[in-house]
Image (cartoon, rainbow, N blue to C red; front, side):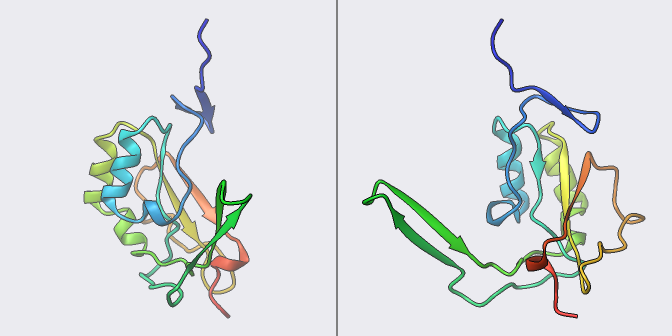
Length: 141
């Protein structure tokens, strides 16, 4: 029997247990469709806030050489730039991801006092919702 990476998360079957992280390469419909066309088991959108926000000033990324040039690491402080939740649940994005046949996961970031935004009524039928409630994603009170 060949090894398999199939799994089930919250009752949703995934052909592969590995999928993209929410971040810089998941903020536009073209990025999300590219993930869906890959061997990833699902498509995870960039963490979204209630309204569009630009994030921290540039530069946001610092590359760090490691191991005598054999590897490279990085530190980033994007400040959660994103198009706002309405973009990630727009019909164009939903249709683009749906065409790939992969489950679509929305990532919601807390706002103000790190409470999840009141979006349950506005969210379409999605595979899953991820809550990004880390302190770094929260706006100052």
